[in-house]
Length: 290
Image (cartoon, rainbow, N blue to C red):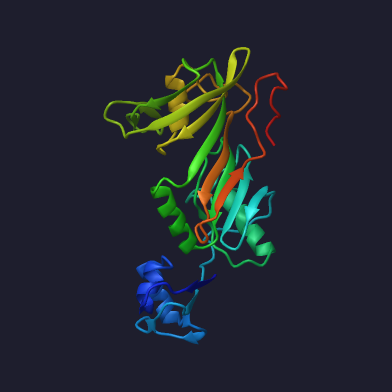
């Protein structure tokens, strides 16, 4: 990946790389050893002076993923030199683990990059559970991933979900502010508990169909299973939720519908939208998944 930047404030090149390009200390050290930095097209050491108007170039190498590339369908919503956004289907894990190295979204992304001749890394900036579907954002380089992490820490990655629920919330709109903790023993499930981590979800009722409702959900925090636990606490579990609801056979009707953020390199606003929608049982009220 090649980064190009016009210097704003006079400083040694190393400081410009850290302060204005956002490179980490490790990236500067590795780039220095590889001769990756230039000022106005001329190779430069990190202690070389850079003045306003100088054009700094950084050539950043990316290590290949440590898991196999695979062919597979990939519904691309957006792509540029830094980012890839895809529309993940339900039933697909996002990333390999030590016990599952194949058959994931990351494997398919690696296959796509290989087929298109892109020497990119696989860095998931957002992740979804296997049964949740919708927008997943990947960074093509560790540097971009770091910039996205800073945006997320600053609350600039704004996620919107849609969910079909059994029943309806007590109000047309509101906020669930209830701490979430892991259940005891070896369980991976969560529960609302006073000693849990702070968790907050904003919700809005969009429509009704019989005994079911369509909700817009905006997580203010990002706890594991937060939306599922909070919807269940309202008395309206997400349709198809086997852990916190009734486990209807239609599958979990939770969609990562939209992701809004400033582009990590340009600051231009991006709004990424899934083409999928949660559905109501035995109804054409909404299009089915896919």
